[in-house]
Amino acid sequence: MPRPVDLPRVRRALAELDRIAAEHPELCQGQGQWDEKEVQRIMGTPAKDRVRAYRTRLLEQGNTRLSIFLTPDASAVLTTLRTRYPDKSINDIISSVLTGGIPIAPQEPTP
Image (cartoon, rainbow, N blue to C red):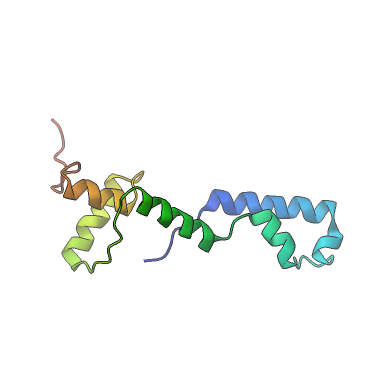
């Protein structure tokens, strides 16, 4: 499954790059080719460092890392749950299902 792209962050970074290029064309060699120092300054913390910090926070909260293989049926149920709870991460959905916070059965329409 592809990793999600944080579009608002990408748009902010591109807008910031455009602003800096307009104000300081010498930074991008006048050709839109940014050097690594400027990209680092604008983009902030690299993704691998953010992920490492996130995983560290989860471990500090007492969470356990687990790798699983899902059957096609289980994957379909997880896809349904992700659609039903778009504000929750896969971690939150699986944890809630296992602890009874989210029912697995499809929601019945209310009359």
